[in-house]
Length: 313
Ligand code: CP
Image 1 (tube, helix red, strand yellow):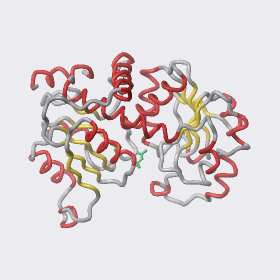
Image 2 (image 1 turned 30 degrees about the vertical axis):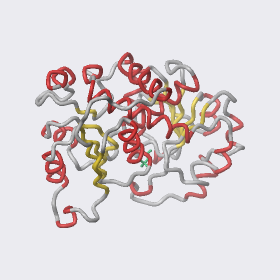
Image 3 (image 1 turned 90 degrees about the vertical axis):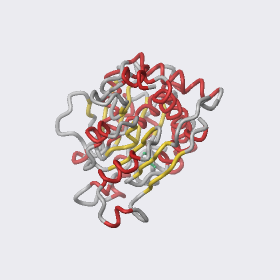
Image 4 (image 1 turned 180 degrees about the vertical axis):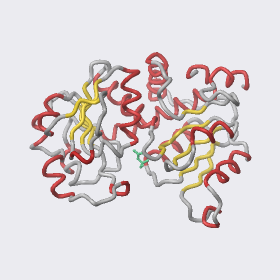
């Protein structure tokens, strides 16, 4: 196995694959992952070989990502161990995040799946641990598996990515999902637009087309993705009622979106803020399908990193 990992090393020094961002993936590699995810949707077979348990370290809250990685491990026949939050761990006694990571790595899991805030140096510590690593959401820096599962959902329902026009609505500046979509859009050649309150948008970002109004953006889009208003990352709290009036997805605003387009949201959803609850009944809405595709995509990624890491080299 060490020889295979030598092929895939995305980090150089220790010959273990670290899946931190999407910058180095080619269109071909991404579609190979999608093909694997789509075949797993049809035939959900477990890995044949035995691997040590997977370690999930979630230093930030999560429902979808954590449970879909656990589900993906279970479907592949892999056991997993979980550290979730600070409570009940030695972080409460002052142990650092870095020491926690190094100690879990010393237990020799087959893979580490880590969600953390920006202050964990994920790029450098993933090089130290000599264990394959997946970024499961890293502060504002990136959430690569979320962007991949979004793209897989678009591909499933729109049949293509290269001509798609993806409108991101709302809290673009604070979103790690957006950071990963900008990397993925480059590889897969889809267009990214955005609209939202001025303080939520990029000051300068040449890769993103800005729209002055939601209606204008929706008329342009083939996919609209509402983003959660991330109050925990803001210095001042936003008036959520006025937010929905101007930027919320509801039956009235969605009249501007083509009938063949898709409505997405990475979750968790603030009902009545980014999106009206009725939108979940709109046939264009694929928000829960994103969650379903997330399991297959993560199965495909785990399986590739453990068995065919050269496919992502
Ligand atoms: N989309 C997403 O990352 O959701 P969770 O925070 O619930 O994992």
